[in-house]
Length: 416
Ligand code: HAM
Image 1 (cartoon, rainbow, N blue to C red):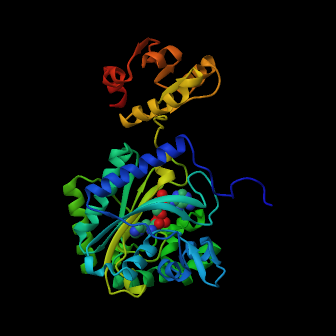
Image 2: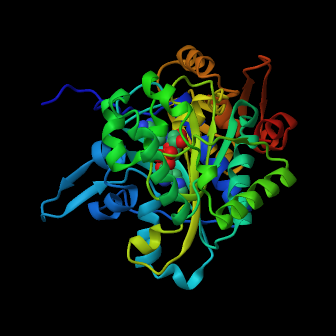
């Protein structure tokens, strides 16, 4: 058997990590609701074909990173390496065309066979938002506003820079591809082996190379803006104009190309310099051709995904919720203690019963767990139908009825 450890690039999520990740998801879901999104949960695995073509056979994800396997029925299946293609599959097979525009919010685990490092895992988690239907620059901006508001609510917006570019329409892309190939061909032998390969398969991705030699050549490469058609330029101008009007600051980054093949027009990333090499926390763009490529009717769409681990790494853990610990101290007190805890929970307080050890041990555990109140239930309390409440912040102790405790300011402040 393999060593009893999580597989490379995966981890168990508990405590501070679980709490900060949950905060990201809750903030996402609450804002998705405010923006009129519906929740969609697609399967974690799909037929391999769903991802292969849309993401691009030559993209890193398809070429090197997908977890694809044959199941016992001989089907080639892929653990989702992202949400978008699976959502488009669901859009087509679920007949959602009837309901466009569709605003769809999803979140969950994603799998890529990458070299693990800080902020990069083989199983990670994404929040994901797609708007399917409208081919409208204002919809791009509305979708970007959702990401911007989530970052604002999490207190992260000032720690990221919003980069945006236009990859143009098909005609712009083809023209740009041609001018890039012409340019890089002159330096073919100076390019890194990876980039030489990409010159054949996907020249745009050379712009993404981190190789120092490549970077020098890339600096003088032609820019996509020179190849944009009039329509593509007008689309992008409207996006930028609306961002200006809404006060969303951006950096026009002509080198931004994204790692997946399906994009056209608007492409964007929120990038931080606070996570080392893995600084992109949210990335997305428009992908008008994807649904048709998967066999649906031609349908425009735009979306983004955020890395939950990366966003969570930027947050400070606010600590676990504080509890009330109910302590039965007599043989006949345990059941009463369970029912007391249940009444406290119904009143909105996190409560649990500690049945093991003597009072001293229970108190030590309660203090260590940073509990807020201890409720002592000994023989005299049970006989008089009272509880003794010890305020663990002040040390004050009083014997009262459970109802009076729930009515008290101290309790109300605690659950507020
Ligand atoms: P992506 O840029 O491949 O886009 O991933 C989105 C985000 O997922 C990244 O910005 C990053 O925060 C996080 N991420 C990616 N790989 C890892 C990893 N190995 N470990 C931890 N976090 C990671 C997409 O996935 C597109 N589907 C986005 C999209 C939606 N475009 C249109 N709609």
